Each structure stands twice: as C-alpha cells, then as structure tokens.
Length: 119
Image (cartoon, rainbow, N blue to C red; front, side, top):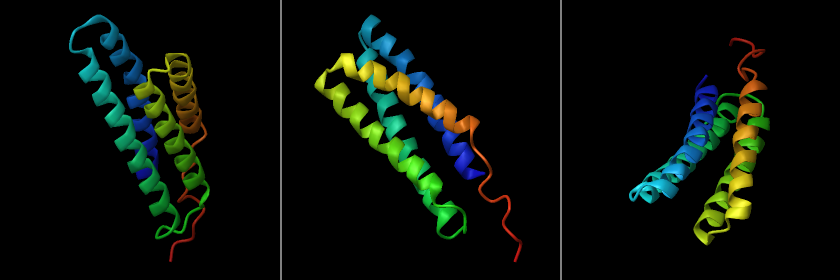
C-alpha cells in the first residue's frame, strides 16, 4: 500500500512541476517555486525507492519495483542536472516523459503483497 502511495505522490509532484515552471517564467519568485518542486520530486523519488526496497526485502515481495524506482530516480537526477545546466530542449521533454512514465506505472501497479501466503 505504501508503494502505491509513493507512486501517487510522485505523479502529483510531477504534475506540479510544469505549473511551477510556468511560474518560473511569469513571476519574480517563480524560481523558488520551481526549485521547491524539484526538491519535492527528488525527495519523493527517494521515498519511492525506499518503499520498493522495503516491499522486497523485509516484505518478501518481488524485486521488480526496485528496478522501476531506481530507473525513475536516475531519470530524476538527469532531469535535475539538465535543469541546472539550463538545457531546456532536453529538460522539458524529459519532464513530459517522466510524467507519462509515472502515470503508466500507476496504471500498471499491482499490489505486490497480493498472492503472498499468510504465515
């Protein structure tokens, strides 16, 4: 359940990022808002990765969610680096891709605890 919540929060944070990017372009304090949204995506990405590890190791679930979470966290790091470098031609499409992947991951989520036998 916690893994699903982490994916939902990740998707919501990625939805907010382009809104704060619009603020970045239109209001004087917009850079602070967009920076805060980037920190949020980063933090939620770490929570997502930690949740995936906890579902696998102590929870006895599949290790597959770790692969998705780690890959997504790598994309997050690349996104942050591109944003800091000012590479908008790569930063914007990668952000769109990340949002799409997060929505796709949320739609394909299956409860990793389902199918486990009670002990």
